[in-house]
Length: 344
Image 1: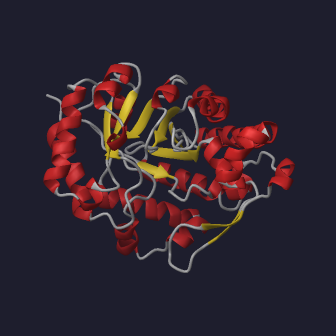
Image 2: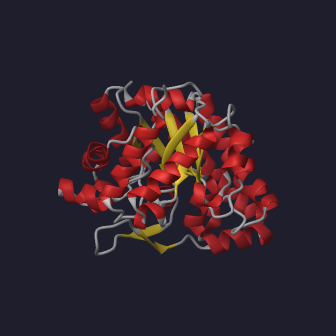
């Protein structure tokens, strides 16, 4: 079974030949950049370089997808007025200046293809789609409206605004959601079938459940509904330490992706199995970064045992692999998934 069929079978709650392996953003980029001799900085500016770096991740690690988006979580925000700068060391850009609250009324929806940076991963996705010709799924990648807004005006201002200026927050979120809908249109037009939505703001360490559902989930649902109407499968990611995953599941995503360090598998299997595909995130913050092959094997085996051979399970890291994650640990995750995840 080719990777595209394997990955989509699991998302569609059918039984593939084995449990697929999911790759997020540009994880463990050190090895990818070393192997290609390319710079991340140049990838942000040139879709051909972006695609070559992303495809090298697939060639190097052999997961069952590639992703047309990296872990900077800022490309959409800069398209809406936040300014960024690239560090001297070749890495993700940093915020230079947020949009001040006094200028919040100037934030408006944009077409991603009209922005010099946001257009790059879309054009790169088209390049990758043509190269793989349906063999490997190219996954679209966008941040949830609340996360984009937090990078436009700053997280502290956003959270305070939810309490003191809710109409201003609604304005920003509405504009960003409209831009997100345009993104869905663009990736659908080039043949992508799936979109990954980063919603790491959906956690009790940032806001209570009522605030989450009033602001964050409200606009996430609008965006997800728009994606579904375009025929896109949706993967909602939440690497929060206290995730509101049950609330997220109520909007009807195709799959939910969580860090196993922060959830209980018995609750996951009880609530999600047979309804929503689950991308089980093996802890990337410590286990995959510092653990042994035996540690990784144990986590994979226990996760698969809890799912009990049913369809709808995908294995991946809990979030983007840290930059210097040992390559042998990444390969161990792949090999253990294949060893224990092959269906009879």
